[in-house]
Image (tube, rainbow, N blue to C red; front, side, top):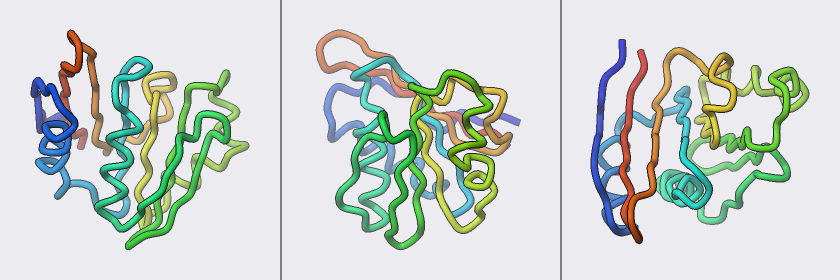
Length: 143
């Protein structure tokens, strides 16, 4: 089953934070959050905001490292599928162990590159760029 949690137009970082606040109650240990959108859409900004709510102050994009691990009030795995060529590479970075970790939250940027490996239960955040600072954010909860 798929539920639309949010379908909003935002024009500022503050409005983006308000959208994430709406869905925050669903982001608990054991949750996978996927982020999709073109370069510069705001995927890492949203990840930084989510992790800050768990006491993690400093994160960086895992574009080159592929995965970063953070500890706050719970453990976070922050992945980026952008530089992965084949889904088989996900075994090398321990992806399948990460998504099975019920004590952690996993956030995946560019998740749409390998939809076949995404867990069935997840929160999917899609961001489309409009004019200037305008973004269209749609959040789906898959159960």
